[in-house]
Image (cartoon, rainbow, N blue to C red; front, side, top):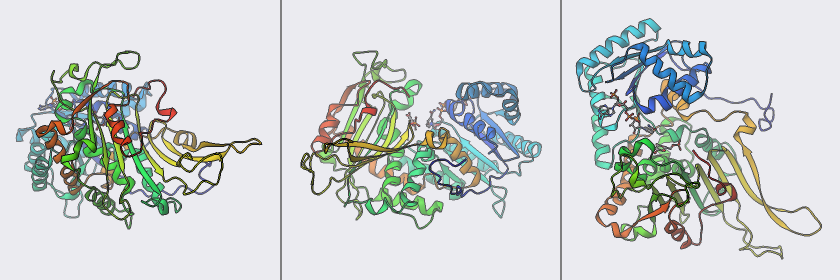
Length: 523
Ligand code: NDP
Ligand code: BG6
């Protein structure tokens, strides 16, 4: 049946076939594998989107038999996806095997290579292998080097069978470490074998920005400094650091969210149209956009960036979080930021002078990620009852999550004999139109890895350009903390008031429309 938006046109899909392969998951005993990766693979299996001949081979130090690993994965899937059809789940688990070993020992990789060969034969999977590194980042180089020494990263002369490696963020903790990491990886792998994962790029609504911008003729002519007043990009979370305090306290919001997810959302929103939807061209346009971001003026950093740290709310009904400094794994005197708001400018023809206002944080009022494009006001009001400055601007909101969709606010006449104006939203809700919730970002990205499509993955240049931007801020925070103080904010609020003041100084304010206020909505 046609959806109301398909207007009878057939869907147009551009998909390469998924080739038979095996996926070797390093860190298979860990949190990410159980919460995201295995449920995503299971989701693909349930929808018949995995290759016909496929296997999953877990690898970690923890000693487990195949059966123990399968039971762990059964629990993980049930927790993530709810009660499942036992036959479907058993068929999926039958493809899962496990081998334990030390990440540093070559002998463990030789044993792994033997298990892979057995699986290749048992599952008739053509010898193609995807290595997924769900491991603390400091282990990434050694794992790749041992894989290479064990002869597992080589590919056939025609690229078949293939070997690809997926890396989870973070990609280094600053520019120097990212360059060192990239140099080590490039000694063992060809660029086309490297997949740097940013799960925001796999979110359905982030991908749909590209089609929204470049498959419709009506928005692109307005998408520039002439018509757009400013753009706000928000990634707010109500949760705290949960069980990841040890990692987060060394990372902080700027590294954890800004260096990757926030900059990618900015790049997709602002980049120039690539000449075609080919991986290298799309990646290059994103990187080019990042290169055009004006570095923050370090001496005036406080006018451009506000950082904050959550403290317990006075009212546990608003947020049950403790002070950040009392979270497990966090130093009692931690100066790590859990919130960042930043003003950014892009030095190119299209965006000269248009502020991009980005904010992200944990312990905020509610979970919401969105990109809100505020257009300039009308040049003149011909309606007597309202002046030009009272007439609200049109705002286009790309709702990344939750309530995925697109809203465009417009002014309209209220029905009735008087000339009254009111704002309303033209609203497209993904769930209502397509009847499904958008798939898990990992599903899409895993499929892309199996198809060898790197469009939605970071390039080496992109990672390095992002760190070039972030590094001076991290240095200034350490060396001259007075330039940009750390403001506490109550958990369950919208962040420190200093962030409101920063925007007020530019004559703007953060979006807090009714649907972003109201009662607390958890992640
Ligand atoms: P975990 O801390 O759960 O580690 C994964 C596995 O690695 C562990 O089960 C453990 O397996 C092994 N391991 C952990 N620490 C060490 C160590 N010091 N030395 C040797 N082995 C170790 O990580 P996550 O699963 O949370 O994350 C994996 C990767 O994904 C990381 O790069 C993380 O930054 C990234 N990531 C995670 C997210 C999440 O929500 N969890 C979100 C986004 C990215 P064993 O002891 O059995 O070998
Ligand atoms: C991860 C960060 O990359 O993204 C986490 O490490 C954060 O700290 C998460 O919670 C947010 O992702 P999402 O998809 O829940 O918005």
